[in-house]
Length: 141
Length: 144
Image 1 (cartoon, rainbow over the protein chains, first blue to last red):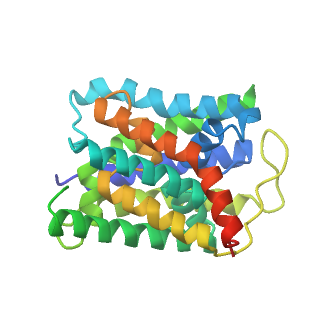
Image 2 (tube, each protein chain N blue to C red; image 1 turned 60 degrees about the horizontal axis):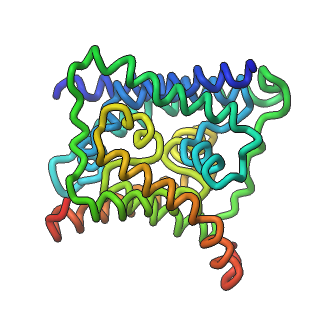
């Protein structure tokens, strides 16, 4: 669609504003994998209220916006092996690297953090090679 | 209490941004990674758009304190170790395979269908499994 990039830019500004609020109000880095990961592995239970409130916001807004769109197709693959393998890789990888697209990508790169930049380069390279191999090579995705 | 309220507002902005930008559409994400196919530039606009307010926020940080008190997070030591690189490579592979990263995985739970729940369950299982994996790796070959 023609306006996809405009909505991408609008959505990006909203995402960055969310990160700015989380930083300037609470003094925290808005990293989705860290916020979720610290809750499920128990290491950050003492912050469950703050993290739970954040996740409630992430879950709720799409529920409120969905009726305006009618139908949203996420085009997720129907291949369960791919879904489960991908979920495991995303879970292990983001916790091992201490960050994902939001933490390293948005919050890290915007302060010119070397770790954020290096992580972002490696996950984009790995993602690009994976799509090339599994889509154009093997035809799985 | 204010801390939870601000966190909710931040999460709401994040969730709204992921939704309207189309980043919960796995084909758009894979389309951006697919430089050999029909390349979709949307993700670059999302990332660029997100970095602008965030960079402004960082510019406010020096010499100030967060609204709720305490201190701002220090810039991490520029330590580029095995965990950062290997973890990012594994994450990138999973991101490319399914077209989902942790934020959109959560934002899409209410409308994405059962595949998104299975993905989220596998992601959470991976997150739970990581501390022991990381410990075992660090014992054999220290990160650094």
